[in-house]
Amino acid sequence: MNRKQLELSESSSDDSDSSGEDEQDFSRAGVSTSREKRNVSWCGVEDTNRPPSPHFPMIRRVVWPPPSTSQPSFRTAYVDPKGNPKLGNRMQLYCKNGDFLGVYPDGRVRGTKDEADPHTFLERKTGGLLPEHVKLQGMLTHLYVAMDKKGRLYAEADAECPRAVFIESFHGSYNNYLSRHYAHLGWYIGLKKSGKFKKGPKTKFGQKAIKFLPRRTRFE
Image (cartoon, rainbow, N blue to C red; front, side, top):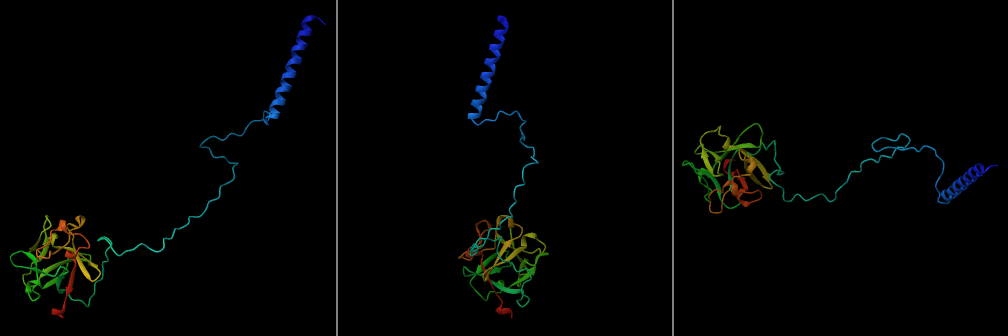
């Protein structure tokens, strides 16, 4: 054997020894030396071999006790759509502040403590397709309660005026009258303790000034 063949045999034996040592090191580290192709699933691609995940039904949450409704807003106030046919349309509106709502021939709408004042005799009339849309007409003056763009109450002669229509709602034993024309602003019919009307921007749901008790004893 010549010198060149001896060098080749020694180099091949060194390679085999190094590969054997590498395999032993991989086996000690717990790494597989097999060259099988891995199953790689890319992001956004559904893996068909993956078992389906269980779907749990939606559980409805029950809150108990229910939330208190002792102080509703004007949007949640109860409105009787059918009304009560036993109650007449003629009435007096007594404000919780102590005055009766009156409509006077000089065009003013104000409160008075005189229960016998004929200007406080009102007739409730329909004001639209919905039962709670009403008009309040003075029986003596034949003028309607209306509200202008500044929230002031006045007596209107035109029965078709949209500012004379109010949304009637009930808060306990009292009635509230929200201006339909300015309902988005939350303006109500209201009376001060002095008897003067309260401007719409100053009114708010729940105030005594906007609570009216219908009295029909004079018209039974």
